[in-house]
Image (tube, rainbow, N blue to C red; front, side):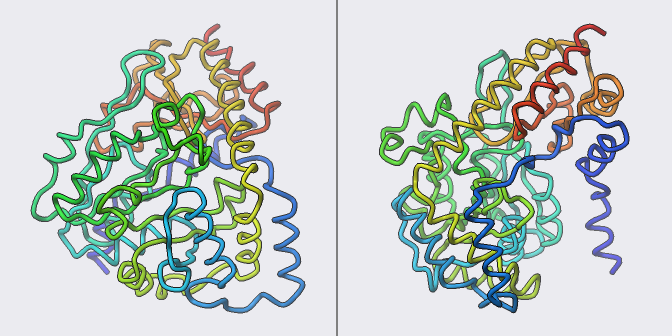
Length: 405
C-alpha cells in the first residue's frame, strides 16, 4: 500500500476540478474542461433509449458487442484503409482513458520508459505511474509568433530513447495544443519506432476534428479522397503490427459522458490489453454500445459537417481572444486554442486563470499543468471552444475586460 501511495502522491485534485468549481462559484463561463454543451445526433440517442427499453442492460460480451466491433472495423477501413478483424483485433473499452491505461499496464514493467510529447493530457502521467514505468517527455515547441505551428524535433525524440524505452505514446490531434502531425512528421515517428522496436500507443480521440487550414490537411494528397486531415500512425510501413490504435465516441459525436472507447491492434496486442482491462471494468455501457454502432454507421457526410461547425466555433473564440489582447497560437484540430498571455504582461498562467473568473467571468486552463518542464509554458493558457456560438460570443464580450483592465 505504501508503494502505491508513494507512486501516486504527486497526483492531487485535478486542475479541471479546481477550475470547474471556480466556474460554479462565480457564475463564470467554463471554457476550461473540454466537453460540448449540446448533445450529439438524435438518432444515436434514440438508439440508446431503444436498447434500454429492449432489455440490453446486462453484461455485454467482454470484447464488446459484435455490431459495435464490426462498425469500428468498417470505420477504420473506410477512413484509413486499415483492415482489422472485428473478432480478434477490436475491443471496446470504458472510454479512451481506460484503453490507454490498460495498454500501458499490459506493456510496461517497473522501470520501463514511455516516450511522449510534452505537453501531454494529464491522465498519461498517472497511467504511467500506475505501471511503475517512467515517462520520458520530449518537448513540443510552441511557436514564437502568431500563426506558427507547434513542432517537435525528431532528433530529440530519437535521442531520448534508451535500452529501457518500450512504448511511444502519441496523441494527434493533440490535446492541449491543437497540433496535428503531418505525414512527414508521422513518417519520422514511425521510422523511430521501427528502428528501436517500440510499440506505439496512439490516442486518436480527436481524429475527426482536423481543420481545413491544418498543415496535415493541406499537404496530404490522400486527404481529398477521405475528407479528413488525420493520418493514423498505423498506416505507415512497419506500424500496423506494432500500434495500439485508440479512439472513442465522446469527441466525434459529442457524447463525452458515455465513456465508450475502443482499441484496434493485432491479436497479440489486443489480447495483452484485454488481460488488464478485464480486471478494471470487465465490461461497460451495455445499452450504449448499440447506439455507438449506429453513430459509426452514420452517413460519411456527418464528419466534415461536424468538423466545419467546430472550426467556425474556433474562429469565433479566436477572434474574441485576439480582440482581448492575447496572442493566439495556431490550432489545427481538437477542441482547444492556446494563447500566449504574456502580451497582457502576465508571467504566471496559473495565477492568471485563478483570477480570471472574478476578473472577467471566464474560466480557462493554465497550460503549464500539462508539462513536466513548467517554465516552458507559464505564459500559455488553453481555452475550449466546443460550446454553442452564443456562449462563445458572450465569453468574447467578457474577455474584453482583460484589455481594459
